[in-house]
Length: 248
Image (cartoon, helix red, strand yellow):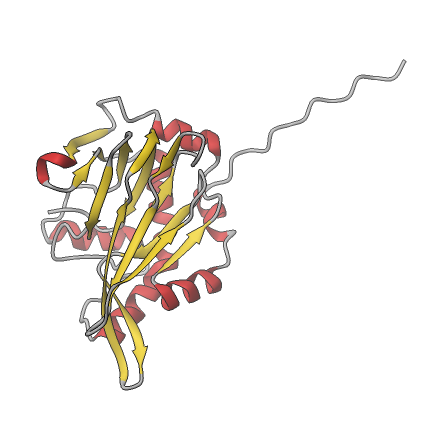
């Protein structure tokens, strides 16, 4: 009688560094240079997305909660994580930063900005903390039916890293409808350009926080960017936001 088949063995979860390294960073950099955003598909698994979203009702992972309507930010709410960050959140922040720092430095050089960013995220955070920016900025956002996030920039202090990341933790058309991630770009003496970035559960979008350089016929000039979320038409939408500078 033949032996029963062996059960399938689950693969161990990939480290943050491994999953970040799996992406085509030449392509990502080209997309960021060309349009101010780039999508990292499947950065998190569905199970990881559910686990992170399930933190939202708990108190201990977070330092504060913001109800957007109270401040004119839109409708919905978000919570800032406290230190120490949840393992995967902190690991992704540390693993992504060195991939982005060279581009951030090139952008600042092209825009005539004096700030330069060290190669290691820990060294950049030390600069933030020395400048009085001590509070962690990664956050978990929650939107229900009718909620939205007005166009904005996540600055938090004088030291600003020019790029940030948002990971969609919910599945469109299953968990929610509407709620598209939106970017706008204002070029001098031109009307704003609007882009809707399509994401699935676990996909991440990298995008410019405030400014990026654009090559023109007379050299580089800067454009201003804002981001937001359109109205959620039904369901519940969670997003993980990873900002690389800390807050004052």
